[in-house]
Length: 366
Image (spheres, rainbow, N blue to C red):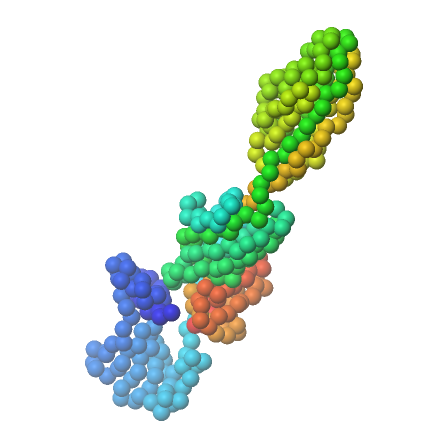
């Protein structure tokens, strides 16, 4: 990666990836250049450094740093010449879905480009599945703090939230794997037993998690001599007219069966039940429990969130160069991760709790 130092009046100098120099020049930035002073006696290097031609001294903002050209030749510029940098951000709170809300996986992998929200500041992203056992790689593509394209491959681990290792300024695409589990709609079956010997109402009690009014008793009018199939048909009709029941289930069945099938696949609900009993009628054999004919399997989904590791706009080669870390006005015990090649892996891991209002100030030598 090649970077170019660019300057703009009133703005802090920035490092820009060489492929993004021209767009920055269109915005008024210029490439920092080595220049000769007006009197022709000094070689001026960007960032306030210049070499005095007469003495051969290296000076920084007018202060002599090296007394002669000979000393300059022996100077380790990587270790001995540093600038203090202040990097300040106000990061939002962490969120498991700050980049992409839970998105259903399909039979084949898919590339998602819509519905993505960029991180508020350059920071690492996380992925999280909705069901135990979900596996596969999620590939996040976007840009780093210098606007260069990057990608991070993160492996799903069931319902555990897994964090990536690169700080994203923007996210342009999330490549999702094929689903691990095939979704299945839960099916519950009740069997009516008996012939009505006395007219009245049969009592049907439907129980289901998330159903309004659960457990809900529905009165079904029946007549003397109605067979089990007759009663089951009347129960199916009554349940099919109940708003709470049909909000969650399709009502079907034949002969003496009453079948409820979830409209949307979901994790198996062990509480689902259809109980049938005599209310004011007589002749039915009470059945307190129905059969869980088919267990439900939830549709796999994955969300992409934001963590509290933040990208730094420089490659730092020494942890001790991080001079001060202040969060919300106090010292923070966060740690620095370094990478000499990829700027997006130079990360500050915050110990404090960001909330979109507290300021993080980092002071380091670069």
